[in-house]
Image (tube, rainbow, N blue to C red):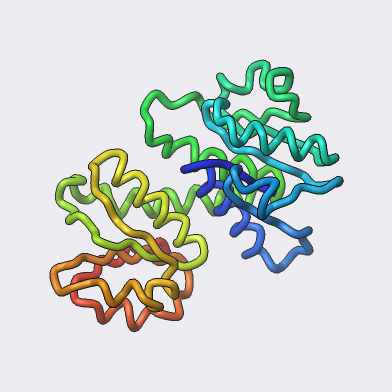
Length: 231
């Protein structure tokens, strides 16, 4: 089980997707959710491996989720920055603290998200998982390095499927934090079941593509679409 809040929720979902994609090896059941849902829609049980992601090690809902999981007999681990990992086992009462990277000094925490995904997938799934995620990051950077951020038009909607959904949600969060661009984010299929009707001719759609997308032809036909392919 992988949980967190904000970007850490996105990291948790991306880790879960990585394991669900690997169908060549037998895997136990994998779940991911917002930490605040633990005890409600997600109930830890004895024998679970329960990972809470919190870059600064200060998120109260993640602390409570780990405490509940520990009380119910799960093995618990905090995934956090190198600074937050010092003494974390005693402060948080977890079985393990997993340091990922130095603590970021700016709010977006993009490095921490990538580091958390790489650390967990490499530790639990093997080095090939970490290499795959580094490749995704390199491709994402290559899309943006050709121009400055202000050369990109503000999107009205960002969509993606599977891993791309959570990359889209992270992109939307960062655009809000860094540029104060308010965007809506949907799974690709969800977008075609209602939200599409709200877009006009002047609206702009960003489509994050990572792997097959059953709606590729429909999205490609949209007038103002920017495809950000990570393939």
